[in-house]
Length: 484
Image (cartoon, rainbow, N blue to C red; front, side, top):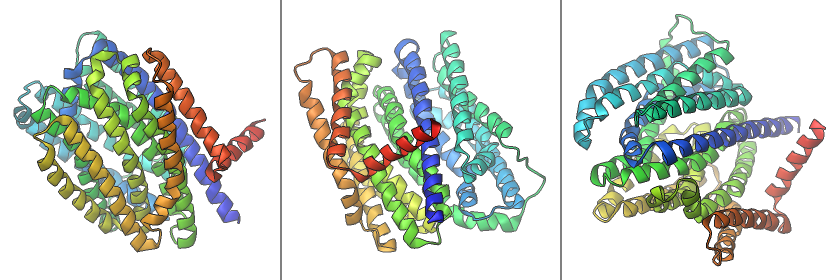
């Protein structure tokens, strides 16, 4: 039992620190984005950044080549492993930057936006800067020191936000968004070197590289395909519907705050923890099922709630200047539900060491993207994003099916674990929608819908004696008693 209790404690602490990290950093992000989007920048500025997002995302995925995941998964990592990963990351980042630097004119011609040349050449420095801190971040994650990572992320975000606002106030427009991303990467890498005492030595092991790369190759290709999937819509919409790309990019920013905060919190916390019990299949599956139930308990009310409140939220916080972003926001939040559960399933496959299956699933997803794009691109930007929702649903169920075939946790079992929280969340949205129909003021709509939905969801979980709800309350109570 001591091992089980240790796993629970590690998981709880990791989830709490990751949750704190995501909540605080997203609140800071919201504040910064509000200042920039509401007062200082417009849809054109965000549209330009949206056009370049796919290139930065791909560069970040290629730079690491899955070595970080391989380091976390290894039961014991050596000094050679860390040095090898460090120097490979730096070298690959520099090579990629050279390729992207000289590709900037072609990118600008593709979008017919000459301003993209100088913007891209500065923005493409982000993967290079980030590469200098990848091993340090991996070591902190491996040791489950998420408290340090939380401080690093919060300080970096605040500093980069101040830099962006100052740049915008000086009248440099879209450069504020470039400065924000570059300074964020620079500050994060600097703090990682300060908080982690490890320093690279002049050492590179071919044997160590082959061992990590053999696991990381499929993950890298999978990661590239995944970031292409997540960012290709910005490219499509930016090329075909240039007037809409700014609205879409703004919706992506807001939906990603919720979607990837939820997925990132659970995935980042559980991957290093579950890697410690990867040889005990029964224990791993038991812990994984509880993770899926907890994910459903948190994810479904948050994302379905955001679908409900998107209209008053955008009109209250960003004004009707960004009203055209609302349909995109609603669709992306709904799609995000499937994204979160898919990410958790991917986490399980990585722990199981089946990177080949991950790659095959990503290839299948990209085939679906091609088919769906052919069906929707002539219709409208909203139709294109609706196609993305359908693809994410298909991808989730296909992932769940193959996990069931591999380890016995079938898609039916997953749906059974998720269904109670889905049913309560759907009912919550219906109650929140009809309850405020007589209310005309959008500020009161927003406040009342949040309050009604929160009270309904928590009340129903308590009335139905939800096991996850009871466990969350017990954790809070124990922490409070311990602090007292």
